[in-house]
Image 1: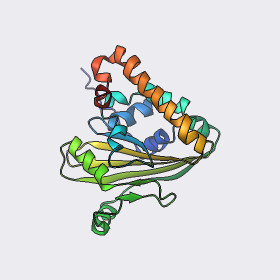
Image 2 (image 1 turned 60 degrees about the vertical axis):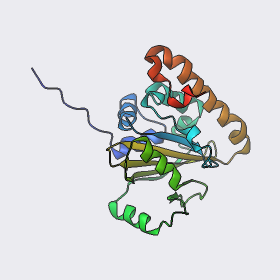
Image 3 (image 1 turned 120 degrees about the vertical axis):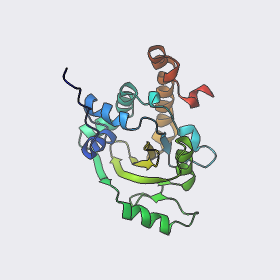
Length: 218
């Protein structure tokens, strides 16, 4: 009997295309699988300590190939990349030395991460504490750093991969929409539709596990 080979893990290139919203299903599957057991937070730049937990989709079932491509289509980010109107600003692995420097420079009050392209794109310390609590971890560090500007939409996004000492990979995304109409009307409706699709449609195929913990509280 021929032993089955373990599928290759997602590469930096895979993640770059995945977050750039233009990738084949096989690559998207590898990227989604990488976050199994970790928290997945997708929040606007105006999040606060009081409301950021609302943007944690929590379970792997909440992010599937179906919901990923639904977001690609409805958000028009995939179209932006397809038309060559997306700037791939940053896509890199983060070294241990950089993480050590961040810990040394952080005073407990400043954000743990701030984009060099847009200061509105930042990650506060309490977000990472939430990720640690979710996976019952003691330490967490930045593993990968991605940034994009979807010019078709006036949408700037930072995607950060945080790896904890439990071996779980967490995804923290922060987005800022420069267009006021899109920010106040279009984006909320798109996100609400995806949440409804995940809760009522995917649940029929995946059972109760397709409903995130956040949805159960609704």
